[in-house]
Picture (spheres, rainbow, N blue to C red):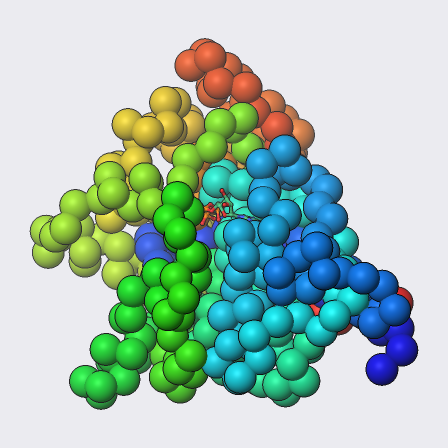
Length: 354
Ligand SMILES: Nc1ncnc2c1ncn2[C@@H]1O[C@H](COP(=O)(O)OP(=O)(O)OP(=O)(O)O)[C@@H](O)[C@H]1O
Ligand SMILES: N[C@@H](CCO)C(=O)O
């Protein structure tokens, strides 16, 4: 085979966008990069799956580098196993550069999972479509919003199909049958079954390019699992209708040529997840009610990004002023933040030869 080298890029993402809990996502121009080099002359036998990982960027002090513990390579190994391949080709090196902060609501885990599936697709020559790769991704992170935005790019809506009984069981097999679970001895009995087909359906909306994304990123982590545990098991009809009405408006309001700031602002309100997560994110309620088109005319809307704690503010100008206002509200709670102005990543995953 000789030496092979290429780079995979996967965007960060913001999920929910207010009312679209587990439904909407936006790909963001902040990319997890995985440089893949395969050189069979190089000895990689120190790793049990022949994959040496170098990692820099967010989480570099804590992201595991063993191939059976790192989310990117664990995901790739899961996909490869379902195709009868148990290891990477001898001589595989990954140089991972990750600017996406972990556990902050910017889709770091979705980028890692999409990156792992894409890596397996390339290494195994599997030639899967993006939709088929999404089936694998959804076996690991079981809501489609961040994953679809990372895979497809742009502003994306998704739903999960109601699969026939046998296939639905296959979709819900335990995580331990798919990936090694932290704190547990890796299983010898992983599933080698390919996932059901067409678990999800995705649609890309247009996006008005005048609207930019301000991400204000508190310097503390909130795991998605913890933020999901804060949610109730059931909702009132009026709260569900509140979100559905706004969701129906929002997906078009963000595409219209004339930006209607007040319409978007109202359509980005939510009653299904943000109110329940407020206790985990001091200052959240104040941020969501203080930064409005009345206080800053270029604000279109403001919401929790994914499971938080990052705040996503959509705006057409005044970016630094708006970011500083959000930062000052958090600072009153003793929370320090970074911020970043991000454009939409319209294209999702990509591969460059090196
Ligand atoms: N590049 C990476 N390499 C290895 N593991 C990663 C990588 N990125 C994320 N992870 C894993 O994913 C975890 C974060 O996932 P989590 O779903 O809690 O947050 P998030 O994806 O950043 O936020 P959200 O889903 O709300 O957008 C990290 O703690 C780490 O275990
Ligand atoms: N929709 C998900 C996104 C985070 O992964 C949530 O809010 O829990």
